[in-house]
Amino acid sequence: MSATGYATFDTTLAKTNGILKQVEQAYNWPRERRNRSYNALRAVLHAVRDRLTVEEAAQLSAQLPMLVRGIYFEGWDPTRVPGAAPALRDGTWAAMGSMPGARMIS
Image 1: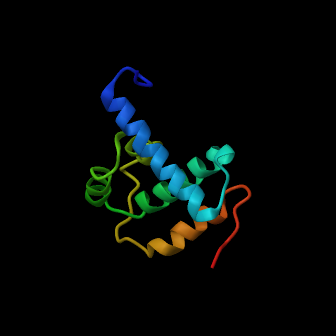
Image 2: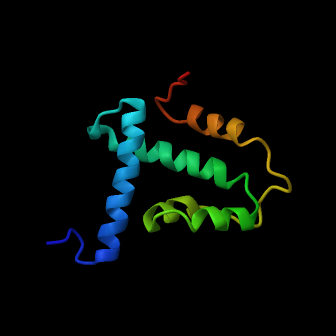
C-alpha cells in the first residue's frame, strides 16, 4: 500500500526524503532532527534561487523533484531578481550561517 495513494506523490516524497537523508549524512545529523535538514535545504535553495535570473531559476527548478520545487519557489518574488548574479558561495554561506544552531564546517 502506498503512503499517499498517488504514485506521483509517493515518488516525490521518496526523492525528498532521500535528499534530506543526504543532508543528514553530510552533517552527521540524526534522523530525529529531520526538521534541521529541511531548514538547511530550504535555506540553501532560497539563497541560490535569489541570486539567479528568472530564466535560470526556472531552469534549475525543472531539475528538482516536485516537492523540492515547491520549497524552492516558496515565497519567491520574480520581480525582485538580481541584474547580475553575485557569487553564489557567499549567499549560501550567509543562509547557512543564519540558521538556528548552524555551525560552519571546513
